[in-house]
Image (cartoon, rainbow, N blue to C red; front, side):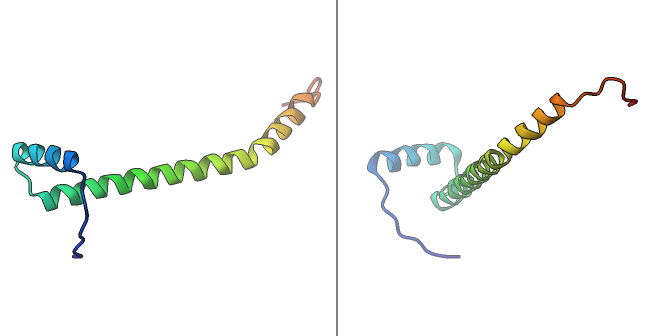
Length: 79
């Protein structure tokens, strides 16, 4: 386990202490869980950005293929 020193805004610290006194959890455990939660959130945001970027890359090609299919004449062809 790593030791980290950090500075926390007074208001955030006081709010955290109030919450900790009610939920009966150590400050260390609470901060570890908060960082874990935020890391998972950030990974989802990174994935969302990557998927959107990749989706934008294939968007033009997909629309082009769709337009080709729409212009094809299927009249008289057996399906």
